[in-house]
Length: 117
Image 1: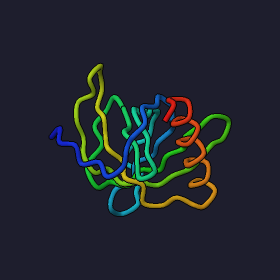
Image 2: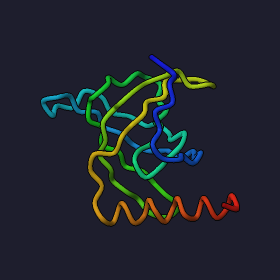
Image 3: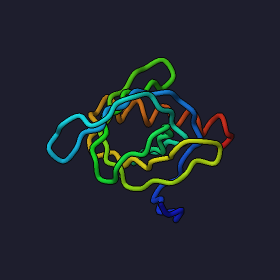
Image 4: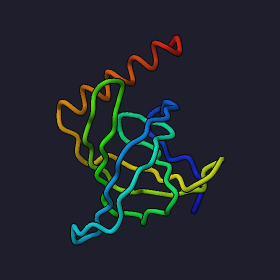
């Protein structure tokens, strides 16, 4: 697990609980559970779990942003140990429908406004 910063867009710290389902290369469910976001951007998020997720597996996410629920699909691109506990997995979004993109952009815009940026 390496700790190199490969971000293309600014991430906003955000702690939201979510459900996840992990699929292998054949589309078979290999894990599922609850986790929480460490940060979020338009291209992906950092997911904290108690178990490691294998790189390049597909992750189906059900994420609550404010008062809306969004379903997203992504791929595990890297892992690292979280500063407090657990495993942090970088998830790059691979599929977001238009509604999901609007909700995510609304959330990030509100977060930037709250930070005064």
